[in-house]
Each structure stands twice: as C-alpha cells, then as structure tokens.
Length: 77
Image (cartoon, rainbow, N blue to C red; front, side, top):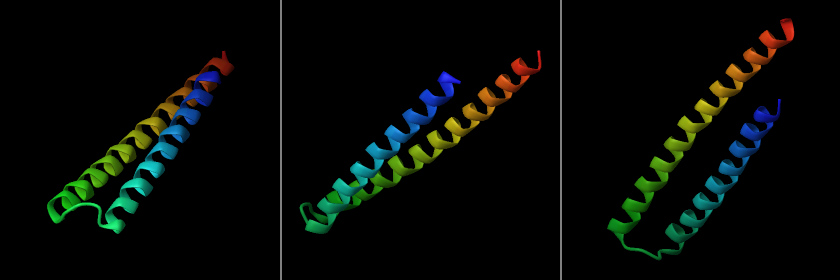
C-alpha cells in the first residue's frame, strides 16, 4: 500500500511541476519575450513535454493497476 501512495504522490508532484512549467512558458509567449522562431521552438517543447507527461501518466496508471492486482492476490492467500 505504501508503494501505491508513493506513486500517487509522485504523479501529483510531476503534475504540479508540469503546470508551473506550462504557466511560465505561456506567460513568456504572451509577453512576447522571444522572436518567432524561438516562440515556435518553445511551443514544440511544451507540446513534447505535455505528450511525455501523458505517456508517464498512463504508465503510472498501469503500475497502480498492477500493484492493486498483486495486493488482491496476496489478500486471497
């Protein structure tokens, strides 16, 4: 059960970091702090981070399912 809590807390921390990063980069884009090419590069980077975090979230959910299944099997014994 402790591992499950660690996974959930870890995913929450990653989510908070991601939200902060998106807000920071979004504010930079809105303020016009960079040129056109840099803006496109930052947009691509944000999209890649978002996609990577989505994949990580799916992996965490899969791990949670595996852990819950293992706990159920152990309880049956």
